[in-house]
Image 1 (cartoon, rainbow, N blue to C red):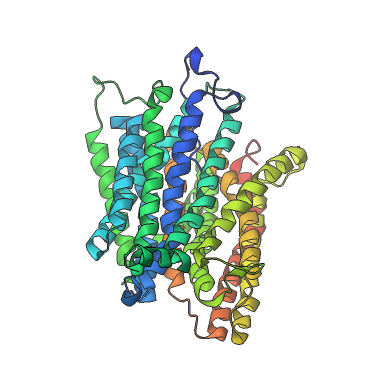
Image 2 (cartoon, helix red, strand yellow):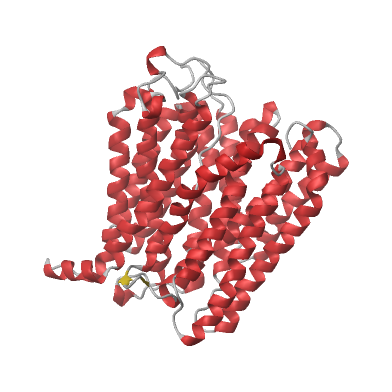
Length: 505
């Protein structure tokens, strides 16, 4: 699941009347942002649960009839854009309109995008994806900025506030596929549509429409309680000079990188070149530069590379694992049938259950807990094991559709990996970033997620449900690559600890 952006420099002063009165004694504004983000993530994950299935569904069944490689490319480009545009959106919020207004504008753009998907046409489909990506770029970094701004520097409630906010994200992510999946795929609901005199093939768009309603609820909550966050996320003063030249450069750079990554669908060497750049950066800053800032940048680069690979495999939940669930898995549990998209809720459920356990574990271990690099290794190991588990599952399709427990086991292992890597990575980025480069480093972390999602779409094009041997090899090869990366990172742990410095292990 996606995680909130850590804010290294919260608003230095918070009015006294906003110190409490909200969830568990937190500022009232937290409850506003909690529910706004819950519904925003409901809309995102509700739509994502259907996206791949809708694109490859035959036109006669109400889908777009895309070939699987085309659908995988569209999916990868869409999710990549959503994260990559966070860099531009965060820059606009910080320097032009303020975080509070960025959430408002971004939220309405996302809402429009979801409603565009509710219409049955190819132009509105692409328009909807573009609108959601643009709106997410504005909203995602800014809403976390508002959460951070609710607390004074050093406020002991700050980490707990972000934990509550993260819980809202995963509640939305858990509930969304259950609702949208029922509307889009359930045969019972399709019969209800027939009874209403409506075409059951349009059930996909009822699911997309439900995501739009979720986003509408989120914006209603945010606007209704906007007064609760009036003291944070202001735009720069009217007399402050706006950095238009830098905006042009950031926009140009973002558009150029997006274009190059999309072109890599046709010219693979472009993708290889872009993915090789972080390796060159690690060598340059870690070997040829000796100052402390350069060493920390090299450490950030190592974690960046590991994160790209992690998200490339993890985010196949929306592509490869979705297809496996829909085509090759028995969609019934304890005698009860369910839509295949409901598997998308499993990860969020495990996050809700395991996040408190991991929070307690790291505190209980204290100084004995693994280093940051070692936690990344553990994350990669769990991820590699999850796809290794898919090898016998893929071999089992020779006898027909396999048990849903295979996928549930996969999601459990992946959630263990996520708990070791994602929140730890966010915290580490904010600690390692040189003071003058904090915003850039946080943007780089979003970039790792963006490139990982793009690679996820590229890899999923190799999924084949027709050949059990090829499918088993597909999962096996990725498990091996992740395992090798874990071994490389394990060997580099002492060097990475040296790069980070004794205060950041």
